[in-house]
Image 1 (cartoon, rainbow over the protein chains, first blue to last red):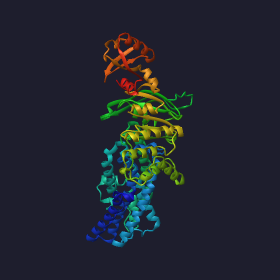
Image 2: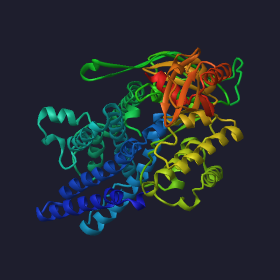
Image 3: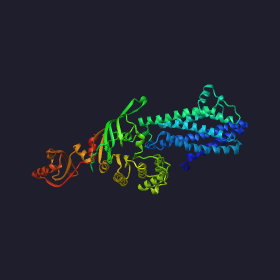
Image 4: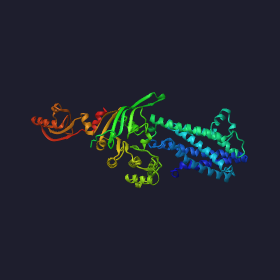
Length: 245
Length: 320
């Protein structure tokens, strides 16, 4: 289907490439040190990977809402976990492709070696990105199922807010105190912190990977419950039907 | 129509006192009672028609029976399973198609059937076989690679029916299956629905606004209005229940006979296009009496027709 949809081409390739190229060129223009450049490029790559993967999870509901075919999905004998896990798997495949592509582009264009920390560190970083993508994607599904089309704009803006708070382009120590506290509640913050440490940046948190995983597990459970509860509510209120044919 | 006599455990649908109220507005203060204690039992293997005016509660009832909507009260068992407790198991055994089908616009016909096949657990060779079977059954082979958005209304309807059979359902819900179709396509869809029951033994519950469709297809029909089932039975039974009587159409010379409306057993008389149409309680008994009386008055009877009231007249009567 993606091969016939320009929309998907832009999401999957165009914007991620534009992101890395523009940030890389900006780093060159501002004469950032190689360390500083790698700091922002890691953020840019994480942003693309999380975005592509979370979109795929959110599409599990969104595409059916847009095409008014939602009821057929919920008429089938499957639970919300099948829906989200299935789309998450596809999202991870796409996320991996994007990561590989952007890593190659970063190396070729800006001599940025994102794979340098080794396979374990890369795998942990990607796992963190994918877990965050799942949480955000499922939360978007829950919001859409809870509030219908009205929630779409809110859903997208909340995704971007989460990514901005997680310190995509800056250490969260530069954030004002209450905002930094919010950032500390976002799992991606910890995975970025852990990965950037491999490029010589001081860690802002102790045991960031363990903390990130623990927070991810907590939010994953909460997001799953929220989506499940939203579907139950939609079956009760009739919203499931309103969002269908 | 063949009348089925159900025994215990033969019911595809067994609903008792089902209620559903929709709440909307700020703090859910606006309430709309969609179902007000609906009880309905439908034997397996039957084609049952649910009729009623717009907003009567047909789609709400269908949605509850398909587990898409949860009832507020009452007890609903479908194929012997509770719609709330056993919803997932039940969904494996039923399916539905709507008269206003909608699927992901960019998917091709074959992909739509395959997608929903996967959701029902089909994969590999079994999925390919099923897609092929349904594409052939609904004569969709030339359109297999056409995106959904490029299909005509009739073709979309056929895709919806193909999707609805992807899990070989025991119970099929059809929500206005011929809505907006050309007459020739409607006829074919109706023939196909009848064939589904005949060849596969599927129980079918359909809603429709077309009385002719209900009369032609359904073993029994139920009239729902304002969230209540007002009447049910075979079309013939309903006509008797509603006491619409039978119609004697007479071509007379002279054409107007005022006293006819006052004759015993005549419920009402109207003149239309040179015919006098008298609705009588029992045509077999009243026709000889009326003919004798007309003869005695010197009125010449040039033509006589006896007909049952249309189901549409029952509908109009009940919808009042």
